[in-house]
Length: 309
Image (cartoon, rainbow, N blue to C red):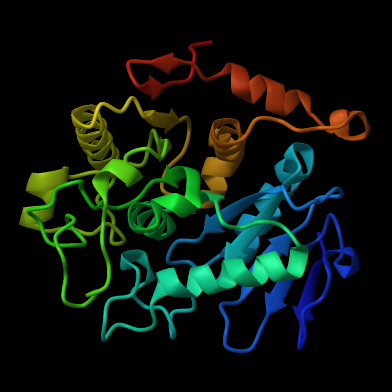
């Protein structure tokens, strides 16, 4: 798919923007991002924000989700958190460690709204690896802006514990003095966590310490399960029945591309986040591969696992 680069000095209208193409949007002073607009867009069109990991492959996120975005009638926005400006984006950008990633995303969403005419007050979110770290922390800080979220193989998590300092817990951190968390609000956001069945290595990208291993577990899968259990338990304390789940992706290690190709990760993301909104013209775009991939998943004790052949 061809990538169009839009360096826009003034706000363009939605009707002027290319459809069914991934385009890079560069705005002076704002976060760069990749944008995919489906064929039909109106002010209520849903927006998926997809956040990269430390490989910073934002373009690949937009490209990989484009086909399903067209089928579901969803706009995809993939922000690019450069290493120079946002070295600490996974933890929202603590003082002395680059720019604030959460505020940069808020400004970017305002730009998307101006550019497309679509409401971005509440969006759907996906993040992979370091991007999953950003997404769940952003969700905790701005629950009113997140409809639901999918986290792909986060290395570690912020737990719903007010006695532990952020980013391990919710206690105030002087490097993010204005950050506040309201558990009753963020515990209302449904979350699905995806981890590959082969993503059990303690590789160089996995954050490791005696404290972290003891609190959260030694692998991405164990940490995902503990976080989901903690979130579910906290939600129940507030009388909430919010959905949290861990899903195991088959034939997938810690690779975004292989999780997409072998683990049907993209299909799982859209299936959890969205109800289909497809007109007859686009109905034929549904592939046999998509239908087959959905049949491989079923809920069991809070997890989705592949059926045996």
